[in-house]
Length: 203
Image (cartoon, rainbow, N blue to C red):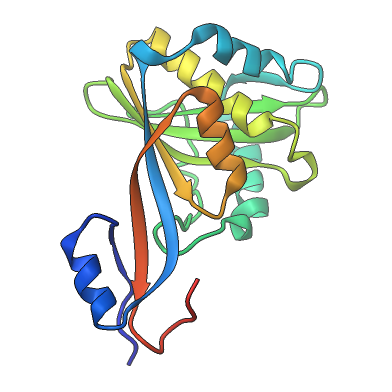
């Protein structure tokens, strides 16, 4: 029977021990922080404005539930990386926003189609936010829509008093890394997924 993957921060002492035992790094991921005090509202508004010709950025609501679930299902197989960044898929309950501790923002075209979305979870005090998922319809990638919905979420939540934002993703996902950097996020942690010798090829 194969051993379960081991996921830990790169500075966890157990990582070095497992590497000595022959465990192999099969995926890398990262976490990043943006403090509201360090955010640049003008820059964030510019990222939103950049897509104004093709989409409207707005907070998602109950009437968007069907479109949310459809876009999530259409992009479910597109997540790079390993188990640390795997997205299990939204449910009718988790797609229902706004909800206590959960918000969603989307980019909608002139015909009402949902092109991109991001979901954010809030702590009970409403002071810290962490990105749950950000996705863009495959036909509309490379246009800045993912960055724009993330920027819209940060702008909206800063106005509501959120002071700290977290995001993350697979180190293979260059688009989401670039989006985080554009918003002002700073990577402050790396996570490794390791598998026992013989269970998986080295990456």
